[in-house]
Image (cartoon, rainbow, N blue to C red; front, side, top):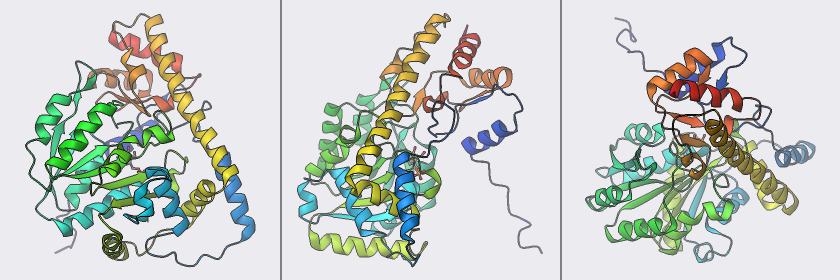
Length: 399
Ligand code: PLP
């Protein structure tokens, strides 16, 4: 009997699968609004100048490539803490944050999930409906039962906050709630500051375990503003998990740079939590890779590089905002039979466009425009060369 004779073919990842179809499409006018990657006005993934400078310096220094510590580069982890919590956060001074370098945001979520599973195996995990697809899959793979909480109301194109609160109020203590700290993927719709305060209050009162995912810091309103939710949980002193990613904000997708931070109640607790996170890492991939972490640490810790990065990040953010504005204006100009003004209110790389699976199918077959069947489009892939095509095609499939 062959060992693999009963192995079933696993389904393709829907978004990466879409990418393959896109790559095979011969039409020169094709546009990929499917995958969550920022491209510049030339349609390319940028290599940031700050990254190039840091890489040049690193190449010249010819640093040997020994193993990193299990938890990664110390200068990287402390820069992550300052970026997320603010340099003046009392939690930093009190040693109440355990941070480990991770393989992107996904790696950070996975280390956190595995640690939580050892801590409380019977806890349920709640993810927003809808959410980034991997949230559910990742926590299920870690052994948890995953439920979803109401988040988006397609009619109001806004958060269904009453239903969210009602769901949270039914959760047992210890339930892990996954929250998008900013630039919600896939909807682009975030909680207001007042709603965040209410969520913090409920989480504290019901003793839920918040797990914040921040993959787009700097893509919403600004670096500091986008960290507001993380800081609210920190100020409330709640034991929280924060998975952050630099894939988008440094345009370093393939280098796998992120981190997991855990807010503890004391310095002694930090040491114990850190020791457990290291155990998870040691038995998963031993220690993280050097390059991405070293580059990000150099940029965040050197004032000139940091200023350059902040400028480049704000250019990316502004470009997305201008594409949102352009798309709305062009859809209006071409006479689309609905109002797309809500696209201007959404933040981050994505827009829940309201297009149906049939619309998306027609966009692909008739126009070579690729989007996710839920109607999610990546606004960060629009540029001055493809926006006319996209706006005209959307208008045609709608009208
Ligand atoms: N979390 C969310 C909400 C995301 O959208 C993404 C990437 O698309 C990630 C996490 C994963 O980030 P990374 O590519 O750094 O693993």
